[in-house]
Image (tube, rainbow, N blue to C red; front, side, top):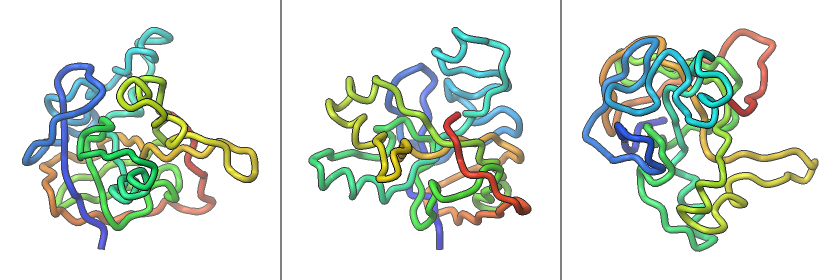
Amino acid sequence: MATVVSVARHAGHEFSKTVVEDIRIIAGHGIEGDAHAGVTVKHRSRVAVDPDQPNLRQVHLLQHELFADLAKSGFDLSPGDLGENILTEGISLLDLPTDTVLRIGPDVLLRVTGLRNPCAQIDSFRPGLLQRLVHKGADGKLVRKAGVMAVALAGGMVRCGDRIEAIRPALPHRPLERV
């Protein structure tokens, strides 16, 4: 069963987020009190290009299983460290198709828009971490492991322990790409 391990938010544009007891998701907006919430893009690099583009990165979800993998390489990480809003367990986020809807708890619906594309800030946080989160696979294509981004379709509260259900879109499925 897929579940929420932790939730986090931060009002400022900091790299890491603060783990909290619960977060409120607002439909069409994202996480109440989080710097990346809003209808239009909030990530500074994207705002510089076009501040009016839609915000496809309202909610960042990350798989907890990644932490164990990174620990083998000497990276000891805690919830919120990588800027995720929702840390999950038991769901292979990176294998979901684009437009998968995640039902979290009884009320929240998030639509997965794509892969998080981590930037060089990660190496400022922990030197060498970026190459563990983005690297070339055996086929020569980039492999991104820094979680997925989503938009809020239906709001409500999300807490540690909430169940997560993945509702895949109709075929044909489109693979996740960076957003």
